[in-house]
Image (tube, rainbow, N blue to C red; front, top):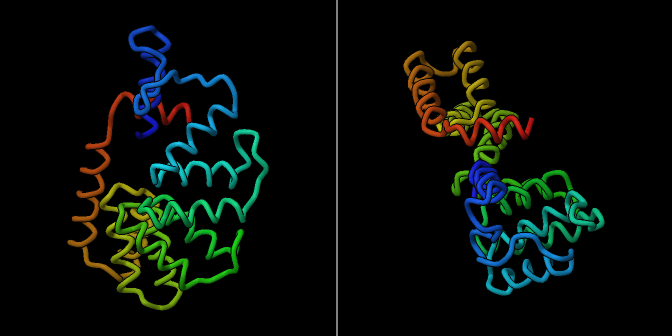
Length: 202
């Protein structure tokens, strides 16, 4: 579920319109203890839920849920989540390989994971691939990555596409079509709930 849907659900629960239950598990949302919460995550992991591996990996990565910050443990969980198909886990595995966090640095493996994440729709991974191609002098391939990410509504990529246009790497028509696709994507994703979520995030 996206953060906007989660926020909307939380508001509905707070107002008493729906029960305070997990919308996926159909059990009381408020767990009695951290131990109970981990039991639920482990249950999802036993069912090969890739996002459960990602979430627990993210907890170790950031030191959340009263867990120690542990790059190695986080990487192992991201690796398992990516093997099960989570594009977010692929992105984090790529990040770990690229910066050598919890695993030996390996740019080739980082690129491999970011490619799989990008195929799954992860715009930041697509942006990273564009940056790597640009650094390697592959301008044409770099611009293609940036354009794809921008058309999906990734603002940072749109900024780079604009810079590429000013530098003469793409045509006016390509830039215009990217702008239209970006705006269409942003408009499609607009909602009152997402506006509220953005305010909360800020």
